[in-house]
Length: 153
Image (cartoon, helix red, strand yellow):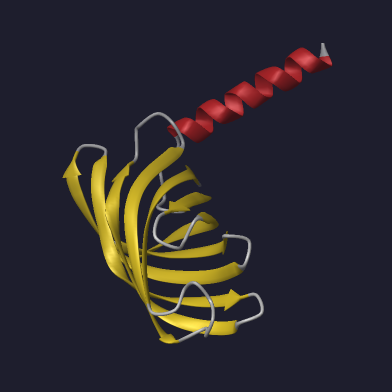
C-alpha cells in the first residue's frame, strides 16, 4: 500500500511540474561536437529581464575543462519554437598547457514544448582565444555545434 501511495504522489508531482508555468530557468546538458571541441557541458539558464544568462561547465577531449558564460537575446519563431543569440566569455584549462580566455558567441534555435518539462536546443558557438594556451589544441579559433537538453525548473 505504501508503494502504491508513493507512486501516486510521484505521478501527481510530475503532472503538476509538467503543467507548471515555465519561469525561464533550466538545467541540463549541452552535448558538443565539431572542430577540436568534442565533449559535454552541464548547463544552467536563468532569466535576465526579457533575455537570459547561460552558464556552462564542461570537459572536452579528456584534456580540456572550461567554464563559459553567455548572455542571450531571445526571440520567437512560432509557437513553441524560438531563437537565441549572444556574446560571452570562456575560461578554459588545458592539461599540461595552462589557462586561457576566449571571447565567445552563441546562436541557435530552441523548442520549449508545452506539457512536458524539457527544453531542446541546437546551437553553434565560435570562440577566439585572446589569452592562448600554447601547445593546446584550442589555440586561436574554434567552433562547435551542440545539442542541448534541459529540464525546465
